[in-house]
Length: 466
Image (cartoon, rainbow, N blue to C red; front, side, top):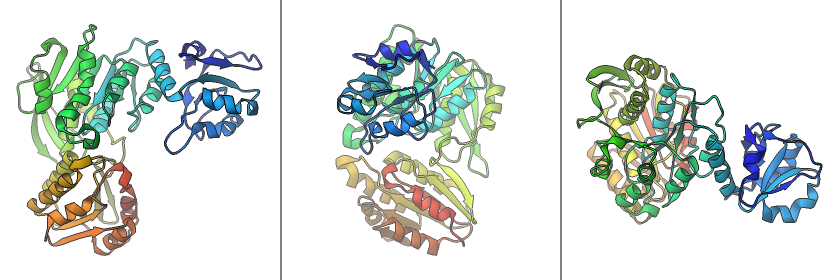
């Protein structure tokens, strides 16, 4: 529920209520005219591809109580909506964040922000899933991790919630600082530092500077906030070298830390089992997520759960019940005799390397097909990083590589004369070729940045008839 007073406290908010309707609160809010429900507040967002203001006619037909709109739009269109309630502000995106911060401060609940270059969505999902065994937990849906998605999650907070787990994503400097200013977290976790968004961050040091804005925020506050730290990441370990140890809860596979992990084995589905040591006690837990990625995603979630007082048996049972919540991230699809590894949500050099290592280690008597598209937002490092992927594929002795995209052409060139190495200028050509070459029992790994829309390739493979 969002109270009227919260909205009216927004900076320079003008309340338009022509018929003096009695209104004290809204049941929630939405930026999607297709999904909004009666009783909710519609927030009109002007984005790159669409403008929510254009759908206000449809919104009010659903008996929505009111809408938050930009002043510039309202001045031009107010005569079309003489009987509707409006909250008129300068910038609806900034006001969305401001409203979320105001709403968040109505609830005295721990807020955990999870950032990092790789694995943050799965780590967030796992962490929320485990904590929900003990606490009523609000978890951000899917990849709601930016200046719009994070506030929308916070606005769902209600009096029944006991903890909140948010994902924080950034691809430009100062975005993490902005998200922290909205969510005001008490706890934070950075999964790792990797080669993401190099077009904007330039170097790994640039990536670390932006991701560590979360830790900077937490340690710069006097409330005794806690940072969860993966000590196997050299950048994270170095960051905490001279920090107050009382504010850091450490976990690792390789060092003596608060929570110590030990890899035991992968099962037949390539899901890892790990042993956990905490306060001199040991317990094992199986992470039901395919791939090498899950080693750290799982350990991160376990560390947070232990800090918040869950026991080993609780954690083991709860994680065993987990099912992948966010699609397109190392999602295993067994269909029509194929094993398809759908890793199409996003892509950067480190996540590609880890994905390839996973496929290499996965035991199969049949062929393994590597299907790759461009890693976007690499900037000047793009050609170099795509060439490096090709070299890795060649050194790992993969025999079947199929690439699509302008920069992936350099992956194709760098892979050289492996047995089957093909580059495609269109997804249709790639799909047609894959349909002709894959056989029952084969493994197909599909990876690419979100903008390359490689999920279309996955969809076509799912519907193939061998």
